[in-house]
Length: 164
Figure 1 (cartoon, rainbow, N blue to C red):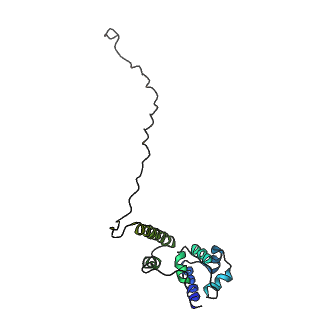
Figure 2 (figure 1 turned 180 degrees about the vertical axis):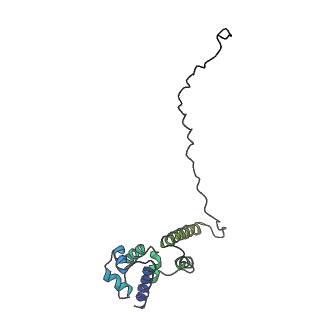
Figure 3 (figure 1 turned 90 degrees about the vertical axis):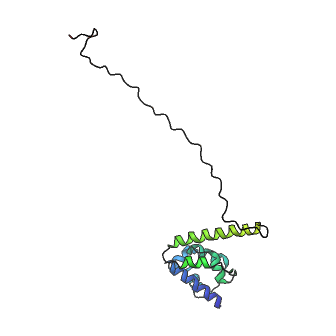
């Protein structure tokens, strides 16, 4: 039960870091308040599905909870960046979540690239940018203007060129 206790401590720490009460987290995760309390105290071992619901409610990686619960093994070097992001007190919880999601998407993308590359191939520096098609430029609409009105000018001379 030592691993379960450690998991509960981890969940409690994440909950407190997120400034969420036990009752709020239980509601967000869709579990009962007493059940969540038992998880945090190490008395219950939640299923992977419950861990995923808790992770979603806390806006943290489900993988992190799976590792804490012993469902997944921690990969070497995979926690350096997430731990640094989580420890950064200058970031909001939402910013941390977005950064971790982007980081994980890059890791997954690169894992696919590694599998697709032949042995000894140089590592790509970046992913190829996608061609962006610009929409056809619209011609500006012709301005509708009122026809100019001719204004008669007054002349002090007569048609013959003399003055009257």
